[in-house]
Structures are given as structure tokens and as C-alpha cells.
Length: 370
Ligand SMILES: C[S@@+](CC[C@H](N)C(=O)[O-])C[C@H]1O[C@@H](n2cnc3c(N)ncnc32)[C@H](O)[C@@H]1O
Image 1 (tube, helix red, strand yellow):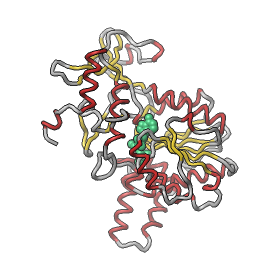
Image 2: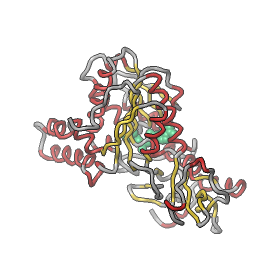
Image 3: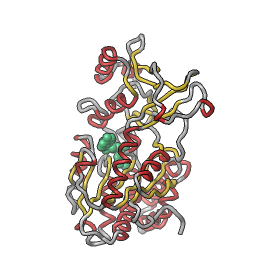
Image 4: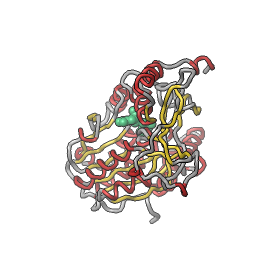
């Protein structure tokens, strides 16, 4: 990537610059929404996102064991609900459909699961929906697509969301001498997008840390989208039964810090540069989501470190089974993949797994040692 290309405004930057000049700075949440989801120029609508030729790689893209173990977790969840004859099997943000393909292969172990399931994929990108359809073409279950949670009809639910919540827009607040101000996206004197601070203090109801718990320069993030989404999800689980497995990178306790990050071509990228051409995410505040789910009457398990969770589900055993009778280089790749998704210095610690369930859902596997 040359500096010139880096410096060329994308069509979306041009549009946002005009809008900001006309109406004033926008929130980081509005910027993220457009950068990721703008119908014509949003990142997920236009870019080759995944794999070596894309921008990043997710756990199911690294090792089939990830999806297979989650498939077994879902099978056990279905059995523990009394094997209902009709239920929603749902994935939020299915990417290229790799995770669901592995889940469906593993769940073939129990006859009746696929017959009882109605497969729903919550996906915003038309381009990725086509990839998902292509990948799941041969499966017993024909997917249906939803734009939002409310599109999925009521039924007991088994849900998985891997790296979905980190895409949901966040707002940022910065401590100044006088208190907090919202960090917004404006236009600088070179005509490029840049951070500016809002003029007015945010409402007290946002619950920002007090002056003695923060100092000037600190950043606090809130994802109102994620909070609203988890509230709706938890209410449905309480009403209809079932459980959701949420896997993402993030922090166990709410805290200070700027976690907004952009990635392009497997490298970090300035978040306000090239909107629509780079992935944009923020750490998930698991503590805030758990609190909302519990307030809605749901049960919450975890968050557990992804590595420990996968080990409890049988990662080592499954890796050894896959290695059996395979040539040495394949065995090496299988073990390397298992290590990448579970080792503490790779994805095993920073990625967390949290389960939100209806109160009558039996304690799910993976959250405590037997
Ligand atoms: C980082 S990818 C995760 C892909 C997949 N779960 C995996 O593990 O490989 C994020 C996915 O969420 C989708 N997505 C992002 N924001 C969304 C939204 N607001 N509603 C529905 N899907 C969304 C993206 O299009 C993409 O499929």
C-alpha cells in the first residue's frame, strides 16, 4: 500500500466529509455504522474480508475443530432442553458460512437435530449472504436470512455469535478537566476526517466513571447498539427458552481505554483512514452485556477464556482424532490450528466465551471443570 493510496480519500470519506461540513461532527458510532455497513460503500458490503488474501482470519477459518466443538455444544444444548421438535438454530454474523458448515457436520451425529431445526442467519451483507448460500448448499438445512432479530419467529433458540458483537458501533467519551465530552468525528484543516470533542457533557444516565476514577485524556467506550441488542436477545431467551453462545475479544470488567481498531491486509490501520476499505472493531464489554442480560431475567455463564472453553469441550481429543492416519505435514497443520485458537498467547486468552440462557436452561458445558 503506497502512501498516496493511503492518502486518497475513499468515496465514503468524501461523502462523510461533505455531511460533516453541512451538519457538524458525527459520533464514532455513526462513523462505524457507515464504514462497516453503508449499503454501497460499507466494508462488509464490498471487500474481500477473510483469509490470507483478505484482511483478517477468524477461529473457524483457522481450524474446523472450533465449529465442530460448538456443534457438539449445541447438540448437548438441544438435548438438555428436552430435544424440542421445533427450534431456531441461529447464527449472528456468519461471515463466509464456515462456522455453520462445521456446526452442521458435527450435529449430524444426532438424528433429529436437523429435522427439528429452522436455520436462521442474521446477516447484513448481501455479498456475504451469497457466499453463505453457496457454502451451505449441500447441507440438510436450508438457511433463511434475517436483517434483524425481530425477523426470526418465536421458538426455543440455540444461537451462536462469533466475532459479531465487536462489529457493533461504539461511542467514545474523553475525560477533560471539566468532566467528560463525547469524542466525535469531524473534518480537520487539511479536509480529512479527524477526532474532535463535543461541546456539551453527556447525560449522567450514561454512567461514566467519576472524576476520582479517571483522569484527563482517559477514554470510556459504550456500545448502545450492543446493549440494545443483548437486551432484546435476553428478553427473547427468557420468553422462548434456549441459549446464546457469544464469542468475541473483549474485557471481563468494564474499564477505561481506547479499543477502536482498524485492520487492513492483516495489519493495523488508522481507524479514520480509508472508511469502507478496512475492518473496524472494538473490544466487547462483557460485564455491561452480562448486567443487561441478568436484568432482563436471563442466566449468564462466563465469560470463560476461549482456550479453556475449547479444552473443556475436548479440543485435544478431537485434534488427535483428526490427526489419526494423516501424513505428518497435515498432522502438523491440525495441531498448529488447534494451538492458534486455544493457546493463551494466541487467541485462547483475549477471546472470551459467554453464554446467555433462559433461567431454566441447564448449566451449559464448557464453563466449569468437571
Ligand atoms: C468478523 S465477521 C464474523 C464472521 C464469522 N462469524 C466467523 O467467525 O468467521 C462479522 C460478521 O457479522 C456481519 N455483521 C456485521 N454487523 C452486522 C449487523 N449489524 N447485523 C448483521 N450482521 C452483521 C458481517 O457481515 C460478518 O458476516
